[in-house]
Amino acid sequence: MARPKKIGLDYFPVDVYFDDKIQSFELLHGNDGFAWLIKFWQSAYKTEFGEVNLNGLFGNCSAKNARITTEQQQEYLNTCKELELLYQTETGLWTSNGIKKRISTVSKERQDAIKRKLKDSKKKVKESKGNPPLFGEQFPNNVSGCDGIGKKEKKGGNHVKIPEQFLSFLKIYPGSKSKTNDWTNFFKKYRSEMDEIFPLLIHAVEKEIAHKKKTLDLTGRSIPWKHMSTWINNRCWEQELDEPIPNMEPIKVKESTSEKMERLLKIEQEAKGEPNETDIQF
Image 1 (cartoon, rainbow, N blue to C red):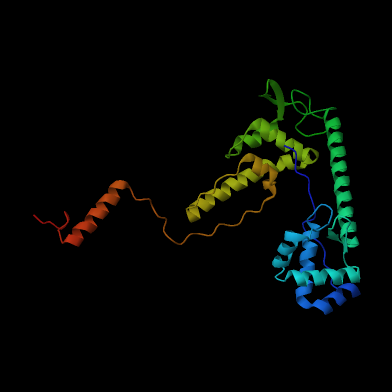
Image 2: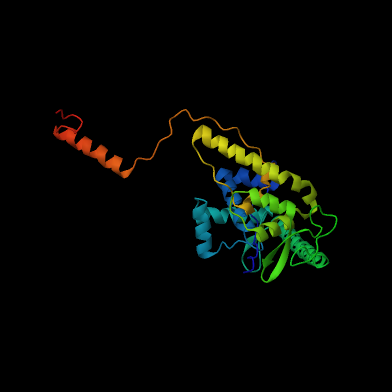
C-alpha cells in the first residue's frame, strides 16, 4: 500500500515579536481576538492550500471552538481584512499571503525530498547489481570475512554466503534469530563499517551473557534476550550495561497447589476451633 500523501503542516512558527498589524489587532480585540487568530492559523496550516472555510456551519463551529460568538468572529474578520492580515478568496475561503507562501515552500521541499529519495533508491539498486552479496555471489574482497569463505544458507532455492565471523557471533547469541535474514539485515545497514563491527560482536554478547547472569544471581530477575534483528538495529554491541543492584528482599517461591490446599485447610480449622493434625497428641 502506498504511503498517504502528507497534507498541511504539523506545526508552524509564532514570532517572539509581532508586527504592527498583529499588535493593532490584539489591541482592538484583546486576548479573545488573539486566541481566535492563533486557532485560525492552526486551521489554515493543517490544510493543503492554507485556506479556511468560515461560511455557515463551518463558521459556527470555528466560533464555538474559540468560545466566541459568530458576531465577534465576523468583527475579527472585518478587522483582519482592513489590516490586510487575511483576505477572502474568490471561492469564499479565508487565508493570507504569509500562509500561502509558507505552505507552498514546504510543499516544494517535500517534493524535492521525494525526488532525492527516489534518485538515491535507483542509485542503490544500480550499485547492488554490480556485486550483490546475496544468492551465491562472491563478496567484495575489501570486506573482512567476506572473501567468499563462509557457509551457504538456502533462501528461496538460492544460496546466501554468510561470513564465518558473523556465523560465530550467531552461534553464541542465545536470543531468537534467523541466519539468513539477520545477515541480510546486518549487511544492508552496516556494509560500509563491517570491518570495525565484526571484532566487537562476540565480545559484546559475552559481556551481556555475564551481565544477565550476575543480574539473576543478585536480584532473582531474569532479563530476556532481544530478538536478533532488534539487537542489530539498536547497535547493541555499543550499549552500556548498568551494574545490577542486589535485591535485599527474599525471593518469593511460587506456592504449589498441595501447599496452598494445606494452608487453607489449616486456616479453616483454626477458624472453627478444630485441632490440627500436629496438635493431636497420642
